[in-house]
Length: 100
Image 1 (cartoon, one colour):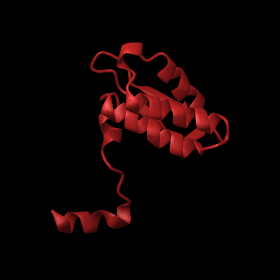
Image 2: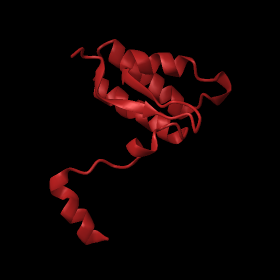
Image 3: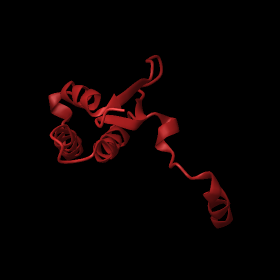
């Protein structure tokens, strides 16, 4: 696996009627971010863009850039609903069940 590929793709959903997209690498995340409307580019956008740029230059891991891209997708409400839920290891499910 290429060092710039994500371990798990980021699923982007633009809403009903649009197919979900999977962003599988830092390069794909950069393409997505560069197409983002200029008027909607805020601090979370810049953070994701900077993290992806750092990963491309080897200053950051692809997984760190993925986390920043997920943050951007979550804030902009593009993150697919299934991915928006926290991932809980199977052996920890009983701990969370007890807290409810």
